[in-house]
Image 1: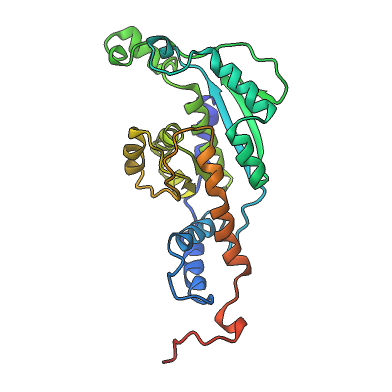
Image 2: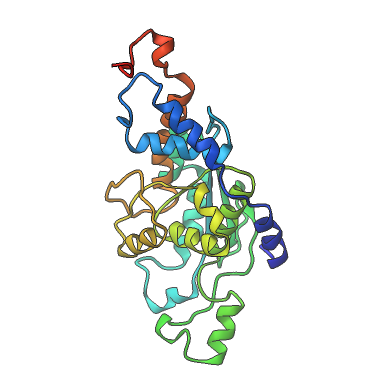
Length: 273
């Protein structure tokens, strides 16, 4: 995303509607349940109302965005797989054979695969081509800030993940359009952290899907004061944790849209005693 486009996007981002959230908090206590008894699901319902400004928000239809890119640092043997696997996995996504495709079908989500920096030339159908460059520079992390050339490369966006930059743009766009964005695992959370550093108001639009087993994820979550919805011992990526968490957003929205109040059901709420 060009800097001027990112700046324009940031200018459109407003904080979430705290008043709408408070109205929903009060409404939840009128539903046929003890106050606060649905725990984090109630917190999620309040957040969805704050994001949308609506007492009865809806979260369907969902979409899954998968951004793909290669890292030059893979030449330093930091990955369990060779770089060629990236293009092979993109093809698998496009064919619908990856875990995220399975989970997306379960929740009725459209999957969009976006090539922002795969080293190989991709020609398969079902992939959005938005390649910035063919991967990032090969530079060992411990040497990344030791020379002026390295510093210039970092400033030019040649080091790091182009998919991280793309996810930052996606979070900014979600916030600008008052849409909730479910954050997946470690890398997605790093991108969320960058987005929130660029525009703190983005934080209110982010729902954290799961706690990854990757050690760095706990640090990134702590920096964002984030409490993920799930902890399943996963570390796959692909948006898998976000897709698995989506039914909880459906449940939170469904509770606000469909659950009876004490008055509707003719049930005493015990407030007069």
